[in-house]
Image 1: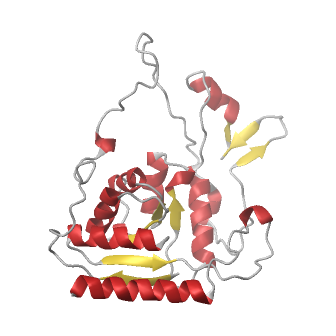
Image 2: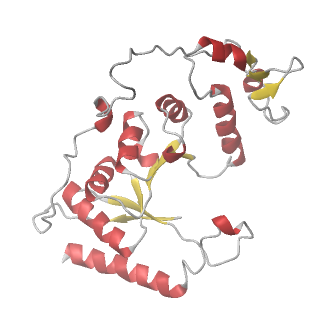
Length: 258
């Protein structure tokens, strides 16, 4: 990725497009609009069950410790998670489908990425669209991760979970202006997905009165030798497109200062 900054001007009188929602409103600080279950049912209490025996691998040298997965099948035929029988978890919580996560496994995964990137100037970004569980996000933030976002609500959730905005990246080709303004105000990196997207980012910079950190995600037109389902870079960064993008950046900069 290539990073740069877009300049701004504090006057926004030339931009009259209204924002759909107040920028200060946080939808996550309010109760959900729709109930999660019919109002006639009594609320059920969920109990969280966690292992009291943290994984020993967390205190061992990762160089000499073989990879350990949190789930394992024991000789008694039962499935275990971090030494805790999954059946005991099932018997201890509300009788309906639920997700069982391993905090030590998440930690091991992040540490493995850190080890692989050791010596490089890098930030591990977790895609919130993969799992927006608030407790998991808090734990990832405590481990030093950033957040990768594709919507305004994901941006607000990341801010609420305490992620460092300068470690967050805002992706997507349908970014709303009000969300871009919030991203600009907080100092979030914004990926430029199109010339139209770039125009909106500049408009957001003017409204916020901030310089915006932008990223140019470049997919070289080479064969990565992967499955066709994820081979999506054909013709995305040829010379003509790159010249067009550079011209757009220069043109927008001139329009802002003139």
